[in-house]
Structure formats: structure tokens, C-alpha cells
Length: 431
Image 1 (cartoon, rainbow, N blue to C red):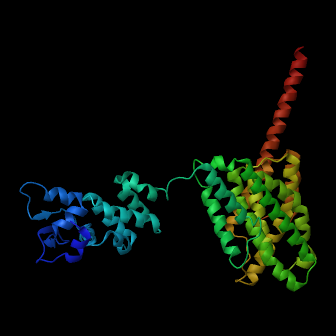
Image 2 (image 1 turned 45 degrees about the vertical axis):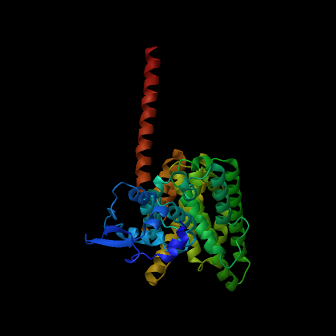
Image 3 (image 1 turned 60 degrees about the vertical axis):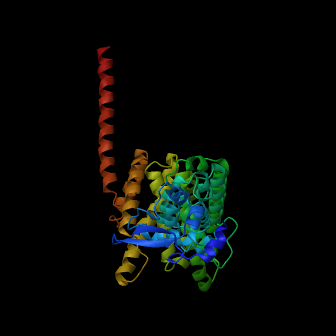
């Protein structure tokens, strides 16, 4: 029998032509009858074909459904009466298609199952819908392959290519084009950080020489841009400087972002060495008389980036030789000590002054400096602590802890020295 012709002449719910009834329970638990046609049901569902072919089969088939899938069964019965090539177009949402798919699997409707699968493979999902889809297709076998292809893990080579492309964009290797360049770059930076999260495959990617080379190129480009932009401040007019500040702040924000990802790639040392190398010239520009009373946002951002460097070195995450550690501290400590009271004073004069060193920033810098001082040779510690106590500004950073530890260590060292000399003298006398 031609199912298409039968479907055109038969209508679901038509009592006059119906020869079989489908009984469902509605949400209230009351049974509802759907007047159907066996010719359509048999050709579109193996479940119905099996039930109808049973000896002494009833003209009423009961389907057990719950309040959650009742609507899905009703919709499935409607779809049974549509031509096969019209089913796909009638599906209107992921949630509905998942529900219909589950009922189609339960009563073995191959045409509807395939249409639902094609629909779900082609439309976008959110995370919650994805979980529903995975549960629904678990029993589909090979038919689920197109859907699963969208969510299966990619191989390391594909992951590496995506990661490298995202890094290039995030670091502006090949400047992004306006008008959406900055927004896309911010998005790329967020995704790079997300990809560097806990994942068993990412250590293999980040250890790759090509990936590290791309990141190093990006780091070099950003640092060079920062130096050039900073140097240009002393050459331009006030208007040019105002415009340039935004550009430099964006570059510093990029550097600060890199401080978040470089440790995860074991490349923080590259930036720390570079920052230590350019620190003297950076401060030479930022402390110029021309910039004495302007660009407070830039100065605070410089402190924030320097704080990342001090933390990396002070807590031993990046190993520098003692002379380099001393130079880094002696370069930045006086400036940090000087800028903090200036910012506090401006904040007291104007409560809406936005460029302040937050309490968290102050605590992190102070902790890093104390740790860094205590890692230096004793004589260098003494020089830094003596210089600290000579200044009027003792409150920040508060190096009291470092001073107390230095005093204790000095006495202990002296005691060990005396004990060592005594033991040598006693040994000489006994001879």
C-alpha cells in the first residue's frame, strides 16, 4: 500500500476512517484516545507493526508515558502522518527534537529518528541542551556519529593550531583590523586563558617548541611596542600624550594578561628578565618632569605589572642571580615608596580620584618585597633596610618583618661564628 497516498486521505483523529486507537495518559493521568490508521502506523513504526501483527490483537494500543513525555508522544503521532521529507522542517526546537527523538527510538520510528538526528546535528545547542542530546543519542549507535562529531575531543594537532591562532590574535601578532579588533582580541585572550586551564592535553601543547616560539615573538613585540610608545611621550604635545596614554595602557594591560598565562607555559622567566632589563629606562621616562603631574593611571598600571614581577622573583617562581635580584629591588623600591603617598594625597584631596593602589595590591607587593629581601645576601639586606629606615616613608612598604628576621639571622650567624672560633681554639690547646 502506498503510505503517502494513505497519509493524504487519512487524518489523525478522524473517527470515520480510523481502524485503530492509540491510548495515552495525559498530564492529569486521564487517558486520551487518538483515532489512528493501522496502515500508517505499521509502515512508519516497527513497534506498531509488531503490536498489530499479534494474534487476537486489539484495536486499541496503550502506550505508557509520563507527564514529562506526553507532549512528545502526541507530536510523534502527528509526525507519523507527514511525508518523510516534511518531518525535518516541522521540528522547531532542540528541546522538542530531543523529546521526539527519545519517543521515536522507543517505538522504532526510523524516519523520524533520522530526521531528529539530522536536525540536532545542524542546529546550535547550549550546554544544558548538549547534556540532553548526549543522553538521547546514547542508544542510537552509528546513527549518532554526526552529532557526536561536534563534541568529540579533537586531536593534539588541531588543538595546537587553534591555540596558536588564538595566541597570535591575543598578542596582536599581525594587528587585528578595526572596528572589532579590540573586542576580538579580548575574546581571544579569555579563550587562551580558558584553554590553559586544567586539561591533560594542554601540557603537551604548551611544551611544543613552535607554540613557545610564537608566544616569545608575541612577548617581544608587546615589550618593544611598550618601550617605543613610552619613549614617544616625551616627544609629543599634551594632546598627543593624552591620546598616547590610552594606547600605552592597552599595551600594559596586554603585558599584565601575559603575566597570567606565561607561568602556565614556563615562560615567565622570559618576561621577568626583559622587565628587569628595561626597568631603569622605563622609570627614567615615567619620572621625567614632563610627566610629574599626569598619567596617574599609567603609573598605577606600571606598579601592578611590576608587582607581578616582584611576586615571581620574590617567591622563587623565577630564579634570578643575586645581583639581578638586588638591582630589580633597588630600581623599583624607591619609586614604589615615593608614588604611594602621592596617590594617597590626591585621593584625600579628591574622593573621586580613581587611580589608587588598592589594599590587595599593596599587600601583595609588600609580601613579595619582604620575601625578596630575605632571599638576598646579608650585606645587601642590610643596605636596603638601612636605606628604608632613613626615609620618612616607613609605612609602605612595611619592612619590619624583614628587619626582624635580618636581626635574628645576624645574631645567629655571629653566634655560630663565635662557637666555631671557640671550637678551633680549644682544638689547638688540646694539641
